[in-house]
Structures are given as C-alpha cells and as structure tokens.
Length: 500
Image 1 (cartoon, helix red, strand yellow):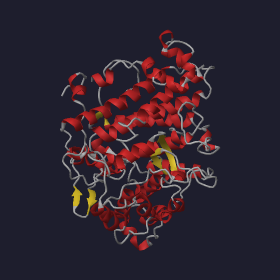
Image 2 (tube, rainbow, N blue to C red):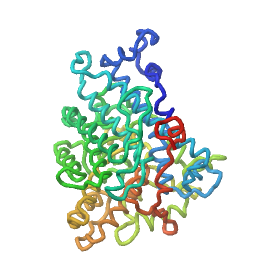
Image 3 (cartoon, rainbow, N blue to C red):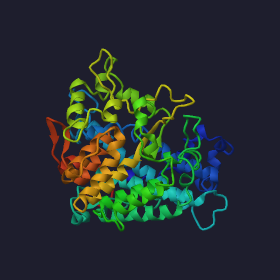
C-alpha cells in the first residue's frame, strides 16, 4: 500500500511548475505553505496544472496510455521481434520484470494524481473570495479525481459480465489527502463514488466557458498551457467531458437506460452540443491533410506541446539502427490486414474509409506504413488552414454516438443503426441499410476498432464487453481474466489493509 499512502509533498509538486510560473519565484518556496498557495487564483491554477502535467507524462497519456502501451494491448501492432521493448506486453506477459515495473508505475502515477486532487479539494470551503472561478475549479478537480479512479478501475479492476459481478473487490477510492491506508472498494462502490463526484462536478461546471464560446481561445498559437483554467477548455476536463464520463460510468454499471443511464447522458450531451458549433461530426477535413485527428469532434483531450515529436520517435518510419526494438511499426503485411480485415472488411467496410486513407502513410523504399494520425499538417498555420493541435483525445463525439447505438441494441436495432451510420457517413463510408440492423452489434465493434486506433481505448472496450480482440484475420485473442485484469502492485497487499 506504500504507493497509495506515501505522503506526497505538495510543495515539491508545485516546484516542478516554477519554470512556467514566474509568480512562484516571488516568495521562496521554503517559506510558503501549500495551503497558502492554493488559496489564490494563481496558486490554484498552478496546482491544477500539476495534475494535468502528470497526466501528460510519457508514462501516462503522452505515450503509454494512448497510442503506445494500451494500443499494444489492443493488438494494433504486430510485434514479432522478441527483443522489442513492447514484445512481452503485446503477449500479455504481465509477470515480465520490465512489464511489471511499467504496470506498477501506472498505478502509482494515477494515485499520485488522485492525491494531488484530494489536496486541492481540501482548500475549498463556503467562502473563497480570493479564488476566481472557484466553482469551475472545484468541479474540474472532482471530475479529475473520478476520471483517474475510473482509469485505474478499467486497467486493474476485475472483469464484470453482469450486475452481480459488481460485488467483486476492485480498487481503493481515495477521497482524502493523508497517509492512512484505504481499503479496497468493490466495483459497485467505486462506480458509485465516481458517479457522486461527477454529478457534483456537472452541477458546479454549468457555467463552463466551453458552453458559450469556442473550445479554445488561443487559435493563433500551437503552444498550449494548463496555467489558466479559462484557456483551451477542450484540453481540460470540461463540462461536456464530465457528461461523457457519466455515460462511461453507467456503461460499466450495466445501466443503458434512457432515463438515467448511459443513453441518457450521451443523449443529453448531444442535445447540449446542438448550440455549440465548435464541436460537431466532421470528416472531410482529414482528406486534405488538415485535420487527421478529427479535432472538431474532440470533447475532452489532454495536450502536450512536443506530442508530434514524441509520436515520431515511437511511430515514425524505421530508419535508424536499433530502432526496430523501440518503434511501433506497421509493415506491409500488417497494412494489408488493415485494408482487407479492418477498414475494408466486407460487407460493412470500404477501402475509401477516410481513416484508412489518411492515417497510414507508406514510406518510400521502406516496407512500412506508420500511423500518421498524430503528424502535424505541413500547412498547419496557413491563414486559411484549420488548426491541428498536439492533443490526445480522451472522449470523442463518435464515442457518444457509439454509446447510444450500444444502448439501443436489442431495444431498437434500426434506431441503433442510425447512430452508427451518423459516424460512418462522416468517415467516407456508405450507410448500412435497415435490413442490416440485425448485425448492428457486430458492426459497432468493428467501427470502434477502426475509430480508436491511436487513442488507447479499444482494449478497455473489449474488456468491458468481454469480447475477443480481433487483431487480424489469423489472430483472434479470446477474452479472459488473465488478459484483461492487469496485476495490482504487490506492495498494495504487503503494506495495505487487504492482505493477500
């Protein structure tokens, strides 16, 4: 339990931000208490920024939890070299020393973020005259705490196939900043705690600027910062993102209801977005290389200014000596599988799918088709260009449509198919006829695999639904607890209240 209960030094966390926050230099950090720092607007901005900067580290969403490790688990990359850094992970060998160290680090990093959220939340009371936008701050931090717990639950929590499975022991849900060991909650309790945090957050964040303006207010600059809560709301856990997380909570709770379940929150989100023209389904932009990320559809993302450089190192063409054990490659054989088995798979696929055509780029003289979804467009800052930003999508508008589609399967398959078609047509795909509604569940799973390449989502979708991972026409990974339940660090049993 020592990773959870370690006494995080809040001053040390804030000191990491000195380079980008001149105000911290005014008073020596040794003379300032953390409680004093987070009772001013500047201090609160920096404290919350610290959570985001941790979330965007390479061990988190800057690499591992988006286009790298989690997509390796999702079997998007065919890794054959046993010397490759990700070979053992791709084979679900969680006991490999290197893999286990990486997994333990994910657990520790999430709980460090949770600890920082809890410290920040301690500062809030009924009277906070020095904090501007106090309700927005509090709502955002509550939502971040819920988000981190949900991610730990998705990674380390048990497989659940029905409501009764929610009684299984899952993870600790920490709501206080202290060094007291926290007992593990069962699945239902974790989801209830997350729901409570998110419901409070959605009420506090009703005045979120993203609901009345654009997603960003820094369109003239690619340099994105977390040091102002009002800037670039799409790259923060905003009001719309909270509703997206609520729909995930209800899916995990087996509540697809149109009254209060996954469908309800997805539908409410769509209705609220009707008045926000900055977030809408749009696919044509990708064809001219302006917006491979479909950024107009991103509801909640995390941003890192050097993301394009990081992805080039991990995903770029294999041209350097020794890089074959680092890069995540897509060779000619794997690309042909994408063409015939994933994006072009019949009867619902097509070789004209915008995602297939624009996300994979053949390297001249090299049998390689690297994922270029994260490549900065060459004309990114031309006057007439739609901007592309260095951000990792956490919740996309397509997920909202897929959620509503899933909720209606077995209830109204024809209507479910309409939600699926709404996304397909924006990807250069033909509409599936109503006669195909009987197959909508199969087609939904296929569309999700096409859509979330590079987002680190597909492994968790397959885990939640306990579905096979269809890696290729010759490689289907059957669902099992051994694959889907990543091991909780041994220290949590050795030093915690649970025992082994």
